[in-house]
Image (cartoon, rainbow, N blue to C red; front, side, top):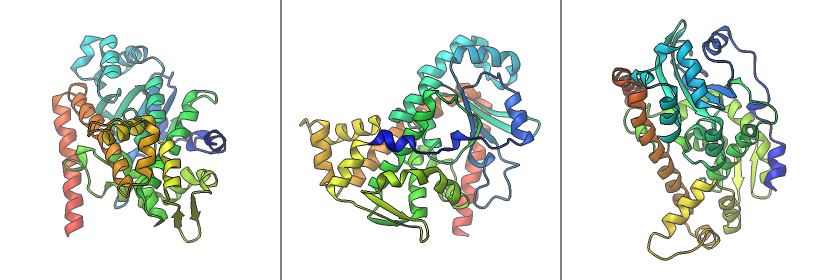
Length: 348
């Protein structure tokens, strides 16, 4: 059932819009053997309350097959992008990338002719694990939201099907968190908020209205991203595109359907939390009991929060040596300024 649904989904990765001169130039800075690349956040799309994207840092994710080979080439082209870790060589950089945090290596506050860049390097095997299973829910969380594709994966590359599976994971998770009736914008805010749930930076250093600011100007993009999933959900949920009203079945049978289609890491966390009192029940028994429990949405929410919290802490700590101490302070200060402005608007 899931396979037939996925095969009909049309995603952003099926086509790539013509790139502006700015993004063509950005791509030209890097080695050209990228598997997949995209820009995300306020440097790619205008967010609510912003006049344009031009003054914002451009955030990129670069997906590569061989992390060590990429860093070796990138060090030759972009030596100044790296912190002092570069003196340890490409093998150490790749090892640090692949074994710590969310398995992403970021170069932060990199100046280029149009402004500033922040780019993360991740291997294709890592991103596939994160998309399918939400192993770290890091890159997968960014891809719950519209992004700007810069380099598309080859037609038969497993990243393509993993990208679709990631969106399926997200919509099943969001529906478990939502009531029986809700508005379209509530769905997109829930989807966009999954990767911020449990992220300590949302309490310190991030714009408090971040999720709303992402969703409001991009309703149409969110609609296009998730539209093809509704036919496959017809037995359990319905979306009226005219009124923007969504209705879903929240019976135990519907909840079991969604629970069985959650990503592996979230399922494992739910089972672990359910069995904390010392008794042991297998996945089937836990999901059957959870589906009948009024606290089922809270159980799913806590599992997502635990996953995000773990990776956000470890990846942020990893960012100190990869960015360098001074850049880490500058980047953190810029985030706090954005949060302060958001608080002033909220209470002003």
